[in-house]
Length: 87
Image 1 (tube, rainbow, N blue to C red):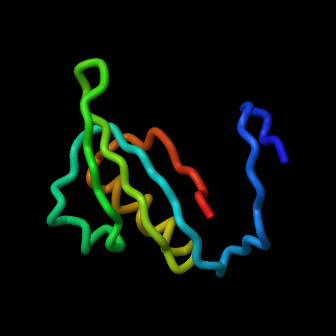
Image 2 (cartoon, one colour; image 1 turned 90 degrees about the horizontal axis):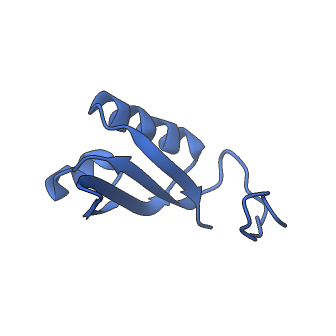
């Protein structure tokens, strides 16, 4: 299946209550010690064009957990750049 952005991917029976792996990118940095507060996501940061980008990747139990994580990132005032379903 092509999502229109030039990437091909396959979705295997994803439902809102299905556990899944997500990759999220935000502008700014997050301390690794906050990982437990952010659903145990693996956190890495890198610099791009003079700005820091933080990548979070990990398995969430359902899309309600994804929504909670996104709200936590917004509460930290980190602009969300990308949310990607990885499987």
